Image (cartoon, rainbow, N blue to C red; front, side, top):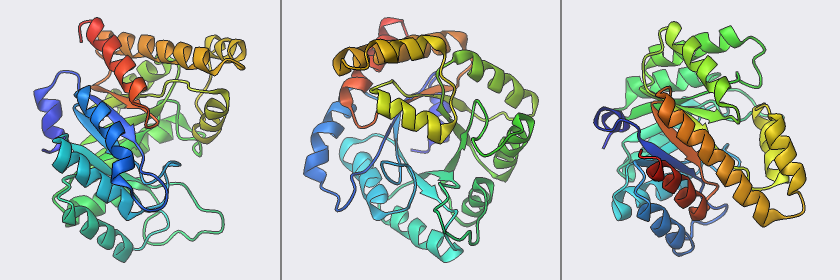
Length: 287
């Protein structure tokens, strides 16, 4: 099933992001997680290129194919391009097609120190290439607080419109911790003519080191409420995880009630308990 058709059929699709293990793909080690995620009935699952979100590999295609074939859940394979030639992308497309994958999330990807930009500089160029050369449903990334490498928020919105014009059919947002940032972003994006579905990406706080790393990588701002919560439970990981999931649940329910988000995309970090908690909160709230 194409992801674009899910948005036509569902008022508020809920999706998860997971990542493949490093090294050889060991399906049996993943099966417990996949069974648990499938039991919560997400509308689709996206699979990153790695735990860090960059670099291509056949594990992404293989895991995405398993989700589709064995669990009957529509799945989206991440594909990055910054260090790739057209031949590299064509080879990756071949792997995806061999797995029967219909949906791709096209990203520039993280720059590699000392790496060389080849045939693709930006995500919009990969979107355009895939729409011209494949029949995939292609999505793209968006950044409610602006891309960490772009100092001009208005320019960032223009880049988003360029991705849509290149053929992006849906957007999944980078994580954020203040819904007000997402509302401002949506208002700007819609005013700029971005009309395709835009999902709100939410990552529950699971630990201080995790949140520090993600904020540094993504440039997401931390509200004082979150800072106090992390400091309060810094040495109590179980309580921090619970508080982090509750904070994310409040974000998600408020976003669903606002109608601003086309869907909710939950960064699960491969933890089924996170998916169960957040999906449960949505259902308890009537969504």
